[in-house]
Length: 230
Length: 230
Image: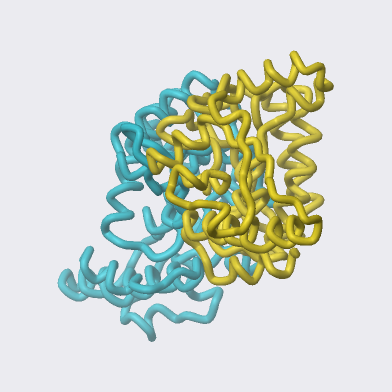
């Protein structure tokens, strides 16, 4: 499955093309195969109102939005899609989950993008880049868990910058950390994380991931930025 | 002169190639012409010890280092170069300037790279990108002047990120702000600027430069990063 994903992403640098490649692999390949093998006729998914609004307004094409952009799943993929949360936003979904007595780790769970770590790599996505951003994600999630922020994650740039290690010049990768406060993901402001914690994060990233020699912190609200980079 | 610079930079994305292009234009074109027209035989320049050390150690090729890397100015460009500060570092140069009773605005002046704003643009340098980073530099310099930091400047990435303006999706530019504390530029730590000021800077940049929808703050010391990005 992983092999197919990377092939579908080869040479793609445009965010919308990358998102489309993920949609095609998800619905036409991965899900289709699972559904066919298990003889299931329905796919239950958690599409919410914000996904639809942002896709229809062309702010960002969410991979899970199908009917609203003219894709008929039954016709195209051979199974029906059920979306019980389609009229709710993130904060209401949390309320429903709490009322259903789901554990806090579920109803307070941090949002994670449909295209997964592909949404966290600028430019062409390769297994090597995913490995770098996966390590950085693990560090950022551990260090910012206690912050109580709405969402926090690293993004790997395609751009590189000069640096020095063991007194030698190098041209290394740049990681940007995004950590935001939000109610429903429609608007967001950057969290004011302490310098001490930010310093610890940059130190761990540049030490444990030697391909990275720069760490930056995103200080832009949504709008004019979005939460994710892709 | 501006036209020549941009032509020499066309298609160049590697930092060392960009630096070399600037060196060639500076010494073989701009300075040569001025010197020839004014019938002067000497060029007095402020090369310091750190420039030479970093160039010889191949951390960064400073454009003003010639003899030490085998370039004989008299032979190659037709004039001699005199470097009276060659045994001093930045902090000692400031002391000399103070002893010589130069005004504080001179001896406390912030370092500025030899290749000028070319060092502040990742990837190919174009007049349009220089215009963006020039505007950002003006905002950052005004807002951080009172910080007392050793050096502060914005860098324009080649990478772009999604954003939204007037409820429409856009794919915009990213500016990184670098602001550091240092004695002699050999080591540096990021300044802990207040969130209030950082927020003001990002707001002015994304408002006054509509091509930019993200502003990040570099939190990496030197080493493993360098002060500049190129």
